[in-house]
Length: 323
Image (cartoon, rainbow, N blue to C red; front, top):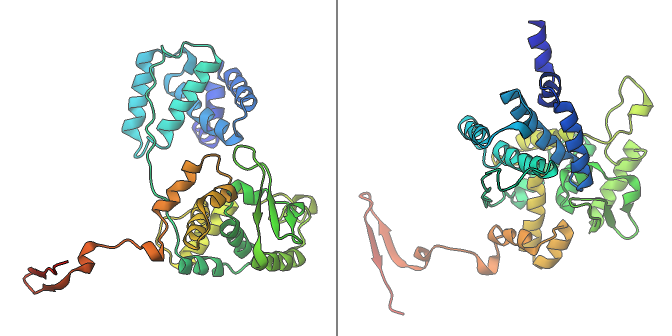
């Protein structure tokens, strides 16, 4: 019973390291190769979790599996998870591909399926919802956090990594360092954010990170650790709930909203691409399918018909005009 209780406290990777001979060494080598290839730490976390799950499922190293066993496991994922094509299934396939590549296994021998990219339009808040979201938090810290995510189009990791020396109030710019793809970029702050940032810094007196954690046991040395990803997510979820927003939103929703509102306000798509830090213009073009333009507002052709009448029998009589 004690063993089972302890197992529930261990992560999947830790369980695999203890239960499957050789997995700890394999995982260490995997981490080295992930780092050398320039992939993010989050990629290693996601991939190693899936490799650990495979190792525990078969009680064997993933590199020792046959084609039939791999097919069996992928089928198991498809049957177990509600939406595996975008989450567990994708990470499983990608992690196996990378693992086999670094171990020199024949790629053609590993019959891994291709992943179809599912194109979904992003969830976007309207301007009233955005105002309500920013106004909800009681703490200035959380209001500024939401305002920066939206006002500068930042990713979660980017807002967490802001340091005081990244703020240029004279030029009204924020230096976003090492964003996705390890790229730097500058984004405008605007007068509103400069004013709020000035007030926030005077009130909270951060030492290094703009958004830091609370004191732990009263020790000042723990005070200037940057805010956690979970802390950012909690601030967004709480504000959305208080604002009564029914849309399924997350931290990245504010970035989508930033791009869409800029497009609707008349900024060109190439400038938006640069502000977002996108490598390919095609990635930014998706917002053209979301934005609503007043001069080209989509409508139903039935709105241009005259003489349409509905009676209680739900019968429609339409009078057409000659053009």
